[in-house]
Amino acid sequence: MRRARLRVSVLVGLAITVMIAFVGAIAYVVMVQAQETQVARDLRYNTRFGVPDVAPRCAWVFVLKDGVLDEGVLAVPGGFPLRGDLDAVQSSGVAVSRDVSANGTEYMVLTTAGANSTVQAVFDMRYLLADRHHLLLALGIAQAAGLLLAALIGLGVSRRTVGPLAEALARQRQFVTDASHELRTPLARAYLRAQLLSEDLPEDQRDGLDALARSIRGLSDVVDDLLLSARLNRELDGPPVNLVAVAEAAVAGESERAAERRIVLSVEFPSGPLVVSGVETALRRAVDELLANAVRHTPEGGRISVRVAQRDGQVELTVADTGEGFESVEAERLFDRFHHGRGEKRFGLGLALVREIVAGHGGTVRASGHPGRGARFTLRLPPAVESSSRLRERITSACP
Ligand SMILES: Nc1ncnc2c1ncn2[C@@H]1O[C@H](COP(=O)(O)OP(=O)(O)OP(=O)(O)O)[C@@H](O)[C@H]1O
Ligand SMILES: [Mg+2]
Image (cartoon, rainbow, N blue to C red; front, side, top):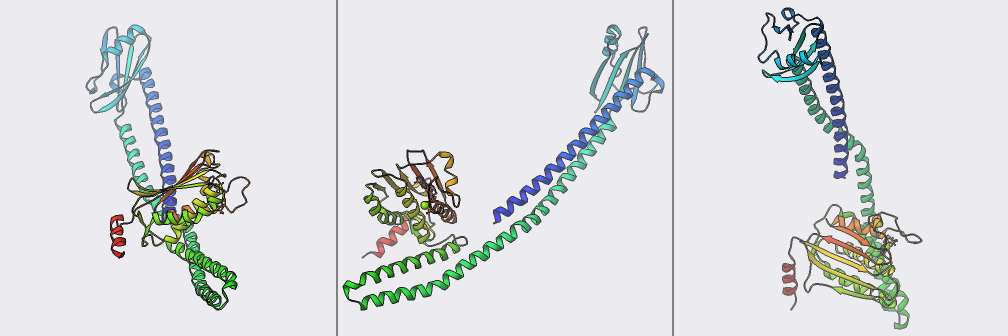
């Protein structure tokens, strides 16, 4: 939820910043072009009608006639007139225009050939450049103020948009925890009663009641899972869970079904535990789902391998099969809620729940596959702070 809020405020901030920058850039370009057009017009006017002694402010006019240069009586900036341009225009008759950087400012210079003289008009851009700098400064200040405003607006907008969603999620979580909590006691009672009744019955009549007790137990597990997954979002630091044991249990649970379909189920587990912290039942459910999917999508005689290992500082569990696989572009979509393969009549929820559980434990799950060449699901979880060796010590010391 915090991420969604941050994303909304960053997007709003970016939109406002881009808008201010866009408007500022347009204002700047328009101003520079207007200034340059104005100066070019002044220069053209001065070359036609300007007189060296009475040139307008910030402008100078020089006339070269019969080899004599008239600079007028006004003070002339250092480096002017551009004698080279005057001579060149006099001999070629082609006007020359250039920008000159000198004396800590910039000048625009136009040299033209008249009927019997050559005229050079110079314009000092100093005040126009100062105007541009002022405009840039104003834009910079507006941008900074805009950024601040954008951050505030973004915060407000994200609160308004994401707030109700957060509230709805909190309410939903509360409903799940309350409902599961209320269901636990009657289920525990029903389980106990079924067991007591079963004990009172003769041996040959117990089967039905035992099956009922097992179903009630299964239902209690589901309710416990619901309660745990509602907590999961808040309590990432659960007790240590040995992922190797979780994988072993999942493999044992699926081995019968795999054998029925002549699927070879191979495992590669380390000798000691690999520990993550979290909710064991939720992790068990995630690994069970990956294995159940693999068995379902692998044809008779295929192979499934389950591997748990430590890699790059993470605990990694891989379920790979030689089944029907999928297009690699599908890989991400498989984790969407209600997404299932073509022609499948299932819910398409399993992998979405796997991702939710894994993300809740601070981990990631990735899928890869090729049509007809199998699929691979890789689950990576951060190791528990309590190291595997310490847990191993605890397990060994607890054993007589
Ligand atoms: N091992 C696999 N090989 C090939 N495709 C797979 C594999 N695992 C999952 N898929 C594809 O991903 C889709 C989504 O899987 P997911 O577990 O989310 O839903 P489901 O198994 O169809 O239904 P549900 O798990 O809710 O009963 C499946 O329908 C299937 O097309
Ligand atoms: Mg599934």
